[in-house]
Length: 291
Ligand code: NDP
Image 1 (cartoon, rainbow, N blue to C red):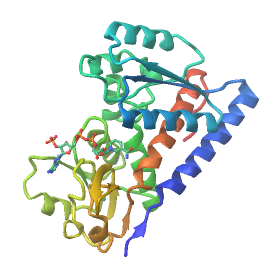
Image 2: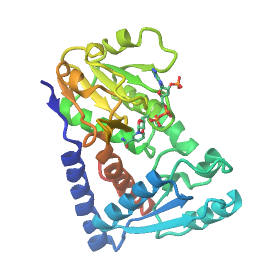
Image 3: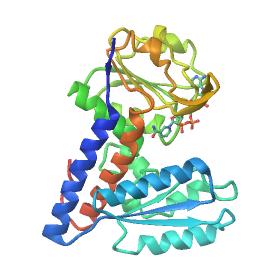
């Protein structure tokens, strides 16, 4: 059976390191990192994420601001708020919770955030910096996956990595990060031919598809590391359950290591958001950011 990668425990370690660093920043420099989260509308899943982000931000000793805006908020009003937060020196990180209501242009809104405060790493400047291997803000979910992979393998150089999914928030930045660590990277998507065969070539298989349990054990190379980003809510035996994009039961019998859902990638995402906010606060004050 595969080794289970415990994202919950890993995330707790990352948060403890962030909290220790925040305490030092306060004591030695009088700086308290601060994160502002903006939520437009009342999407129930987004509400849960925003609450959880706020709680964990306070727990590591940072300042947390939640801006809850009505669903009919105009682009101009939202961008005026972002403008105010951009010029507020107490705010080091700004996150606009996605998805936004349809009448708002998400690209325009995200690109109006000061790139140095874009702790989600979605601003076009950060995307470009990541793509060219320069210092940037790295999207939290792929960053969490990379941290778990480095922890497991040490050096990823030369490994064959397959990322299933090419979204801007997970698949593409994940592929860039793996390439940055000298993996040989394949990005698969809905038009990929012989997906099972492509997956079977992977030493590292990252699933970011949004299709419950699509990737089965016979798609996994024996001994491979499987990172399941998927979060899918389905009904099983009349009860709501959370499953990944990987069929855990069959894949765990073949893989060398695997992330469970829940308790794998998910907890790492907020931990990395806190780490990014700390990084932004350090950089804003001309201090070295933690590695
Ligand atoms: P998107 O819907 O934006 O992208 C899904 C990708 O999967 C697309 O590139 C799509 O291909 C590809 N795809 C869809 N169907 C297939 C198929 N049958 N075969 C191969 N590829 C396919 O999703 P996200 O990237 O935003 O999220 C992916 C998953 O990760 C979701 O379950 C989401 O909930 C989860 N997630 C989890 C996070 C966490 O913190 N753990 C954070 C963010 C997301 P194409 O481009 O060709 O359409």
